[in-house]
Image (cartoon, rainbow, N blue to C red):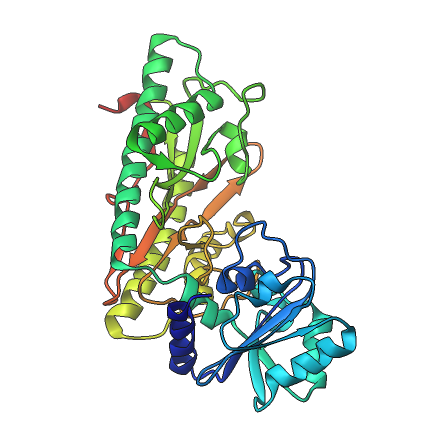
Amino acid sequence: MTQQQLERIQETLRTLGLGAWLLYNFRDSNPIASRMLGIPAGGHQTRRWAYLIPADGTPRGIGHRIEPHISALMIGDVRQYSSHAEFRDGLEWLAEGHDVVAMEYSPGNAVPVVSRVDAGTIELVRSLGVGVITSADLIAHLEARLTDEQIASARRAGAAVREIVTDAFRAIRDRVAGGTRCTEFDVQQFMLAEFARRGLVTDHAPNCSVGPNSANPHYEPTENGAAEIHAGDFVLIDLWAREDVEGSIYGDITWVGYVGESIPARCAEVFAVVRDARDAALNRVRGAFSRGERVTGAELDDAARDVIAAAGYGSCFTHRTGHSITTELHGAGANLDNFETMDTRTILSATSFSIEPGIYLPGEFGIRSELDVVIDANGAVMATSEPLQREVVAIMALQ
């Protein structure tokens, strides 16, 4: 941990009215703690360690005697231990003077991405007479908020993937019109080539799914297991990438099209419901920030889900509405979720997240419409991939 990082954490603790943060880790069971202390991915840590950062004052840490390289990363007063009794005594010393500490814990496991500390350790801390509250909002402030340059990179990435998805539909048009065999895998490889040409990188390959495959939200084509694309097929394309620069932010969108010159009524009807649900969540966050109101990820999920449920497709929307986006595709901020989990964390300024409701009809097709929202430090709410999709793309009619 650097002095600058420590000062930022303490300032955030004071802003949120938290007295102290107790980081705990065992064999990288808590990667949040590893990142905060500055342990590199895959760093050697086989024993328990803990580090208490107060809002004011000097931090305290305990590390095992056979792993002094962990203790060396701790700024402040540090003790070493070997036995379980020493470890317990060390925890008591860390928490001395604090009635409550924040830890990577989520009551009722409502936000699983924050639940990194095991129940036994929470019990141990509480046995010392110390209350434990969630560090969820603290983590979001520290890891999900973006700099001005990161916001600019998110906007560039959003614009780039928006161009690539249209180019991918045109590639389908050209191959189908020319009688050339075209598979989901071919479209995926086309997008990867476009990423490379534009200096973009991704954590894993984008998706193209056709017909019934599009009703599987996490379908992935493979070279030997991809469906062919023909005239009259429904096509879903989901792609995500960021600039190949340290600290850059992902763009992540999903568009749908039909291999024809006009759209079947059934596809158009279902898409309109998904589009309206997407826009309901977007309008809800824009309205909240324009009025200076607090809004949560759960509330944005409800805004989209209510539209789909009212249209009679509630049981066909089988996942959360969106996720935090940072340098990681699924970031540490609030997710748009009151369905899979109950994410009541506040949507913060200087953050990014996806809005991606969907309706999935097994055996027919699935429609998801995804955009990315970036909120700048002043609370301006932007969709990075505008113009947004308003109707199913008639692929064979593209210019």
